[in-house]
Length: 242
Image 1 (cartoon, helix red, strand yellow):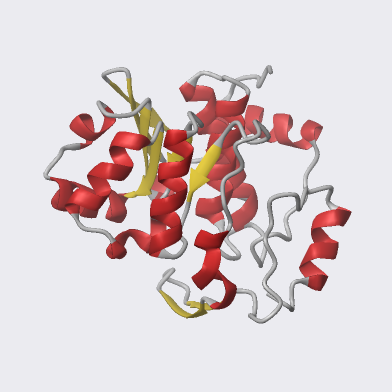
Image 2 (cartoon, rainbow, N blue to C red; image 1 turned 90 degrees about the vertical axis):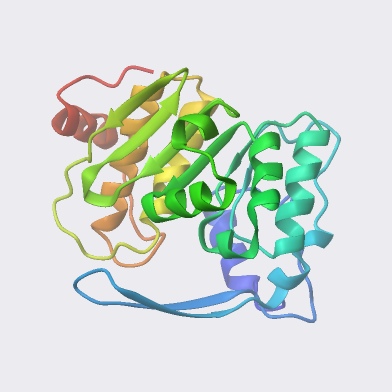
């Protein structure tokens, strides 16, 4: 939206490319205001703004994108981007999140058939199962991996006929759970990009979620590689070698 300026500067300061960002001058950027209590119950007020037009942001076919994620967005954009990734031969993760209620069983099967990976929390996994009629094992048979996060109980990764149990990383304190799922998915994408084994990828994702939960706000946490590998060793009792 037209109020994108300050965040655009933040992206530049953190060396995040804006090459594929489409700015709409007549709209506000999407905004979410989330209230969380001590039991992690949340109330969210959301204004989609420019996100209503996100389907206008086309997936490039020039080879500049090699990995994608279809995350909560407008219904039209999620469908269009999944189709574009699939048609372009670009592997992508289906992460429906808050967008899940927008789709019926047939819609979800179209996503499952096109995606390379699926990432959901335990509630979303149950909803996908109810709407598609498929078990986690059956869903995993359509993709390279199905990842189900379970909060403090860690996560499950269904892949190659197995169900891998990923432990929860240690957090020094629990300050704010908002954004932990996004941090976890960043870890998944990092592991996929580095072609790491799923047990390692899942633990990286788990640790990123723990680091995030220790800070208020969704992007205020900081760490370097040495700190990350040290915490990985402390949390899982093994060295992270990449």
